[in-house]
Length: 111
Length: 113
Image 1: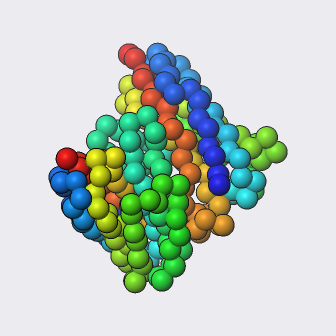
Image 2: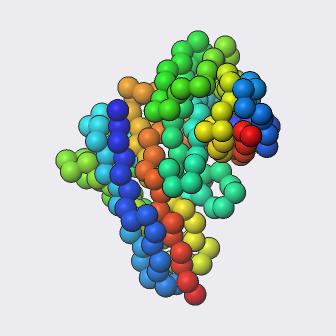
């Protein structure tokens, strides 16, 4: 099993550009979520989903959109990239009361 | 929303000593509490978790305790080894937010030989 797969691993964007971070899981997990990790801030929740067609905002949702058309995929869209969105992004998936598995992360730099 | 506080932010111990990291949470609906270890440049990896119907759980050198009344939980690592050096994160989750994780800010543990 691949687990949780994120693409790309690295990305450099110019301010104002848009892009989509991909996340796919092959464990048939109900729940998926996106986090950003900044030095000294831990991991902060951006958006989460409890199933196909259902998404909700986390702690830091501004500037990001998500959708969940299938159980497997949960892409994160940056609408108009800003330097403040420079971060490492992690996608995770889980089932009820079970451990969340993380993807390998995407290191994003916005210049 | 849920607020998770984690202490200390840094911890240095000698090899063989014990290490304790403490977390508190605010939402009484939280019922699942995992601990993650993250090495530099890597993804967080689960090391142990506990559900709210259990007060303590142990896995070899690692144990977690949970006090639901006080809303705090702790990670205990005994007989520490240099390879235990990493950043450790506690988290809390509940069914009201799809079991998405609310993380503490992390503890950087250094185990010196």
